[in-house]
Length: 343
Image 1: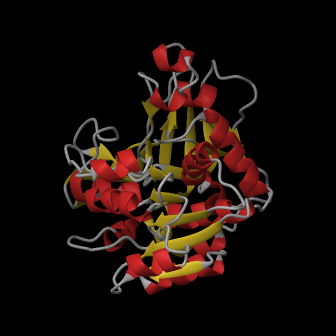
Image 2 (image 1 turned 180 degrees about the vertical axis):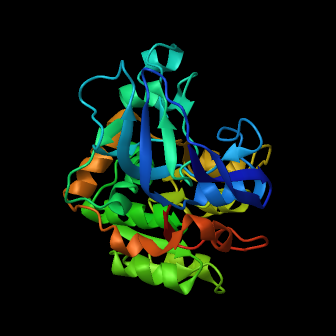
């Protein structure tokens, strides 16, 4: 049996091809994809590849998905049946390595990644079936459920940040994750400044509760942020862009005694230059944070189902799988809001 699937052949090279529908093992399930969502990580992979997600070339492509189980392996637990509507995480930990023993499941040495959401069907590996596959309520659409993965990553970081009502958070980046951080921060009563580019995205940030939106393309934006914080700078700054210059910018914007969170991952082998005098004498703490865990994935799905998070403003449109090359275009400068890709 054949299906249509997108394959990545190298930087800015993807093709929609006819391939065999995956064969599943006894501990796996086959999911007919209802919706796959585009992601900033997908655009990074499209442009330059990815150290963790690309194992072979050509590589399956896409990782945010929800759909319907069409086949269940003979050894899969009875909690999954053909016809179940599900959302699958794009990874699952092994539960027995050095990091799993320390409850740092996102750093698992044997983290099983899932790629290939831009297709008609996808095979869910046993490790993900066991630890990170969830049924979704009938009232929740596939496109809403597919947002579980990015929100899980944001929740993981936000909980570690311990956002407070009497603080100011500056978010560098107004993409989907920046908009999710905005919503979570406002749920905690935190004052939010969103620094980004693109009028459309900044306006969505305002719609979702940002107290101040500032274009990084305007002159004097650093002085404006200081003026909004009585000359001190934000209590916490998070970079959601993942470029060396925005990592450096985050350490320049934060107040003395503040925290910087590096959420956006920079390209492999890139380096940053930080003001050691400012970091040391200003007691600025810097934190790297990566990915999600099964706990945050489950909590994310729960928050979406309870309508605590607004999902509609985050999805900018819809496209067919056959039109994927119109979304991922050679030479494109920025990333659009999420697009729902329908097989």
